[in-house]
Image (tube, rainbow, N blue to C red; front, side, top):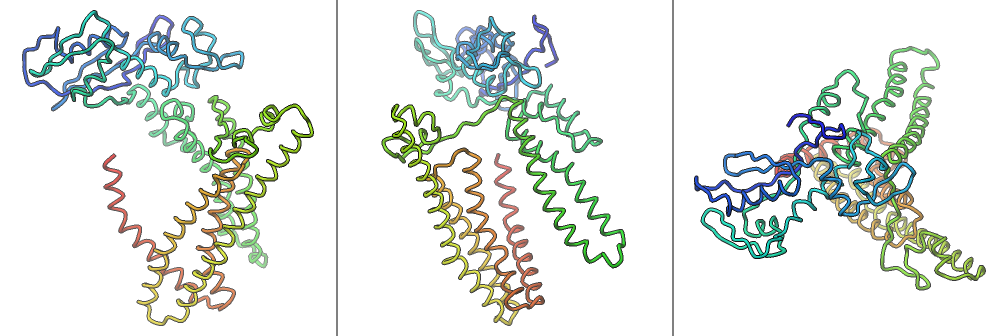
Length: 455
């Protein structure tokens, strides 16, 4: 489909929805009663642009919609959109100029367009005075009054699938300006990616682009330290390099947080705190604990009472976080630490290399299940914490899971380095763990490929 301009000077929307129906065996059809032809005619009457493609075993009905058709559907759905005055108001087609457009210039995001398409195609109902008799390959059924035509055809097995299509115009533009743009490999058209793929994919590639640019600094420093001979001060360069990497990582994460916030603000995305049901204090659920203002309004006007309830909720949240941290810490000290030390000691006293390989394989299999159990336990504990925002919630999860991973990754290294001081054994441990891990991943690789191919 080429680019066409509508009355307002905008490009017409490309085909975005596909409907799959089986190819009919009969060559002659009664178009007035054939359900596929009736469906196509109803799509056109709903203001959609229809194109039929004949496949090997099925027929594909491609649907597009002019901007006005989508706009009127959005008004019927009462979709709220940001306006130029900074308020989110219910969309009205007659006031289309008052609403803020997407970064790529389109009026609706893909999610909004999908809801509009869903409303249009499933909103086609029988408005005639009586039921309509429809046929398909000799099979006859009735389209009842007020019944959705598409749902009825899905129930009869005539409509096999309804799915979104690629916008070939935007896809080719992304290929040309992004995937095949070899010269500026760190540049990411995040606005176009966001408009086509959504927030998660756009944020992921924005992070990769920034990370690739920032990696130039440690790479240049590492090459300089490797190639330049600094003489007697050469031994000081390794600690300096480590300190520089730590400072670089801190600065990178701070700048990324600022850029991420700027992207979300540009895309008009705001995340509200999602409360966890099931926990109440003084008759108030967790959602009221997240906002002190709402808490004050619900409790009453007595200032002393308000302060008491607020402080009690705040201290209760601190106590819940402290309790969960203690549970994780004791689990690491009482359960995981003895297991790690037992493995390190058994590895130290075991002589045959074959037994060491077997011991390492059993250890890696065991810590895989320990990590899974610890992660599930951390998630369940966080559900009962009164975190102020999703960021604090994520930080709490990271701290708990990090303790598990740190213990698994480094306690054996510390054991051989600090207690036994046997670097030869330490080197052998690291090599064997690497080999076992690679063999384990390679054995799972074909299964992963088969799983992904099913999608």
